[in-house]
Image (tube, rainbow, N blue to C red; front, side, top):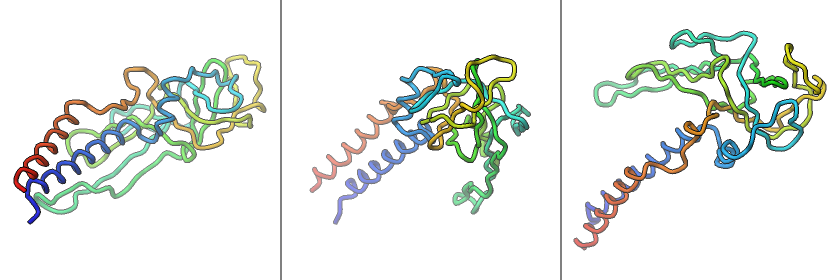
Length: 222
C-alpha cells in the first residue's frame, strides 16, 4: 500500500509548485524575464531619439477620450474590467469570470521630446489592479491619465509619432516609431515596485521542510 505520508509529500509538493506559479504570475504579469531585466537595466530613451532595436520609453499617459474608474471615478487612459458571478452553493461556491470589458480607444505616452500613440489591442499591458473590497464581483485593472509608465519593446522608424503640440523637437511626425511586436506597457517605473524574481524565502523553506519531513516519515515506515 502506498504510504499515506508519501501521498502527503506529493500533495505538499504540488501545493508549493502552485503557490510559486501564482507568485510569478502576480509579479511578472504579461512580461517575460528578459523584459523584466530590460525594465530594470535599460536607461530610458527619449521618444524623439529612439531609432531601432529594443528600447525603454518612459513618460506620462494621456488619451483623447478618458474613461472613469469604477473605483473612485479617476480618469483612466486604458482599463480592463472583469465581471464575476458566484457559481455553486455553500462550501462549493466559487467566483467565476462571466464577462470582460476592455478599452478600445487609442492612448499615448509622451515625454519632453514627443508622443507615441498606442492601440490597446496591440499592447501587453501590466495594469494596476483594484479588486474592491472582500469578494467583490467586479475587478478593475487600469492605468490612469497622467500616470508615469514605461514601455519595453523593439522599434523601428515608422509613422506613428506625433510631436507634443507645445514643445519643439528636431524630430518630425514622419519619423515616428513603430513597434515590431506588441510592447509591454507597465506602471512599474520605480525600483521599489519592480517585479520580484525571488519568492519569499520563509514560505518556500517551510514548504520544502514540510515535503522533506513527509518523505522522511514515509521512508522510515517502509
